[in-house]
Image 1: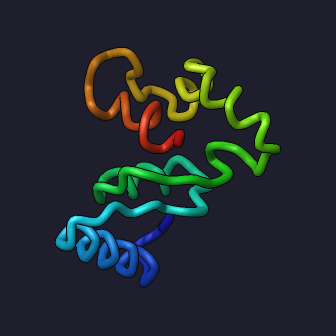
Image 2: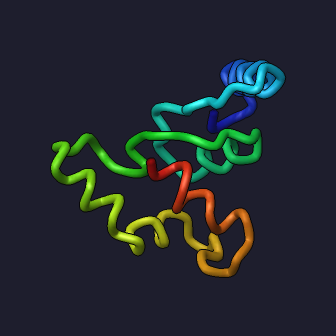
Length: 96
């Protein structure tokens, strides 16, 4: 999803289909901020990938989720704590 490619069109189509059917989409393999930004603009609410964390043992996951500061630095300038919707999406949907 980094460039205007056929993959971008596939993702847009999947998102449009899911939205028209009232389904949620979980994006997998998010590796960089650009991919996250593009997915967010398309309305994708859930995701996972190396941008958030490499695979970790199950016992570490609870610690990661419980740390409210972990996600604040993921996207510089995201405006966490400012009360806007852009500032909250990483703290909720994308970190689950």
